[in-house]
Length: 320
Image (cartoon, rainbow, N blue to C red; front, side, top):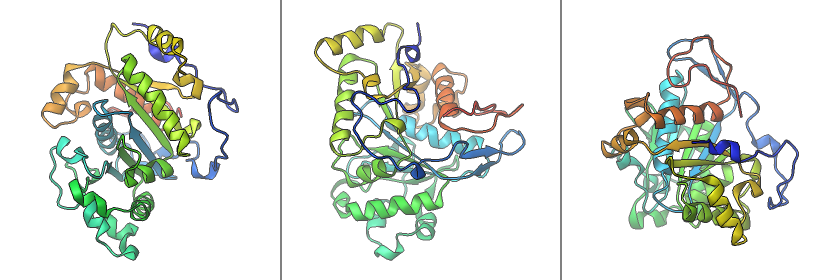
């Protein structure tokens, strides 16, 4: 089918979105062009990080695939960049299932971070606490249930700052409840926000309402926001969805200056990986969904193009 990426124009530099909020944006908080550089090509290129990247992954409601995408990003980055330090954070403090989705049962959770004296929520202590997935990234899982109440906004923001000072890349798996302190902290500090959604009309309309909610809370910055369409089937038609939404007076994503940067197809390989608590891009790198995710990672991770770098991220395009 015709790619949906062709249907969603990206605003030219300096252009103003018709619905984008008037907000001063601190350019110093954004990673510079080429925040990651590669050493000479090899099967596992060594990454030299200039500034930490903080990627928040969220959705308007559950079931969109944000946890799947968060785990995929973390795993692929550490697998294909030697020496890259990556943290994966479950920001759904009460109900998050990031660890169990990955087949992990970590002993240290957000509740343990909340129990620390404030001065101990620092880079050195958090780096020593977080447990490591076999692939190589570190994870901070949900507190779970009532323990989530121990995490205040101040604790969450202090922890996010400490993680960004310790790890080269921090991936936040956000809750769809904006009242969650960890999700608020993630959205405030993220250098990128990826909104994940299935391509059906109800989910897309919910996504645009979610952007409006972010805007109302001062958490929306068009320049750092992108959409990832997940579970895309051949029968989906973006033009029909757009017409249905706009006929009811709604605004589509490009009205906010937000581009669609990836389409991940509906793929049995991804479903199988989730059922086996695995990561599809590592289990079946040749599957259609894995190839689509590889393309997404190439856009997220600007790097020098290699001549023969192997693996998922070999030959990066250097695109923002």
